[in-house]
Image 1 (cartoon, one colour):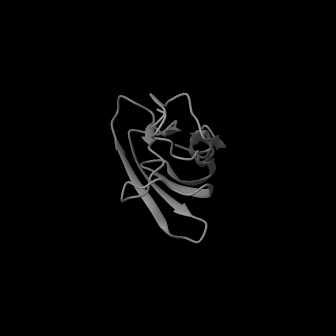
Image 2 (cartoon, rainbow, N blue to C red):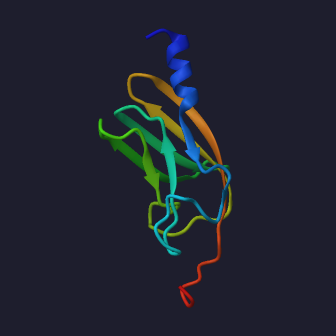
Image 3 (tube, rainbow, N blue to C red):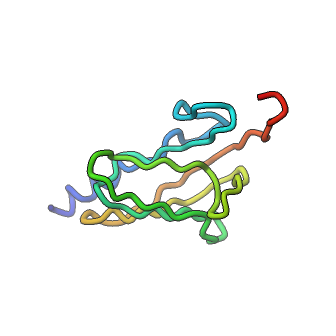
Length: 114
């Protein structure tokens, strides 16, 4: 692949929705939080960082049948993250690397009235 072709593929990689305002169409219920990283190749590693450089979560994709991976908007310990800007470093195997900026405004956890 040429550099132009690789760059075109890398530019298609996105997180949706972005910005995330406490809801996405991928969620199945009020307790579910989900963002989708789309247009990925068969294998990819997504490392999600806070702006201070702390690694929040690492996601691995190794599936030729889908072009996306879902992130539950939680850190590596399974806790909901704070609202704010995050950087997603995507290593797309065979294509290259890119960084996607993502903003999320989290909703308060409301488990009393679900």
